[in-house]
Amino acid sequence: MTEMRRVALLSYHTCPLARLGGKKTGGMNVYVRDFARALAASGVQVDVFTRMQEECSPKIDHDLGYGARVIHIPAGPIAPISVAEMEPFVDEFAAGILAFAAAEGHQYDVIHSHYWLSGPAGEQLRAAWPGTPLVHMFHTLGHRRRHCRRRRGAPPKRLDGETHLVRSVDCLIAATPASAAS
Image (cartoon, rainbow, N blue to C red; front, top):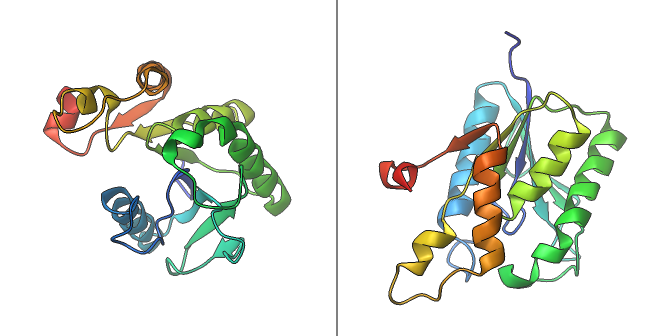
């Protein structure tokens, strides 16, 4: 078995460097940020790919520390948009990652997508990089949102997308026993 050396983490809808306490920042940002740092500390090279939301964001940000970097990929408007508006730009996001990897001459040993919108981008990368496994972590599940009284249900496109990902990825990661049981 070969040792893993380079991981592509996909965090399409939110940046792990985003200031905490904002409308769409919190647990997943912290998880991806700390996970990337831990992988890098163990000697794995980590590229976290996220959708560019501000013109002033550097294309490549090294704020995660040695061995890990955040790559801001233009996909859709370069502005904050709601998660509900992001789905049409997933293909553009995946194409941007492929172009970046080709320009840098990088191959990844694992693709690790986070949240349901990153999953379809991960599937496109896996198709372009045969033999590269796709690991996915949902963080939240749409069908669980439906059962929360104070929240609107998840849109059918999300529910269908999550069901598809459960069947198509090479490995699913659940953060808690309750998530695993879902």
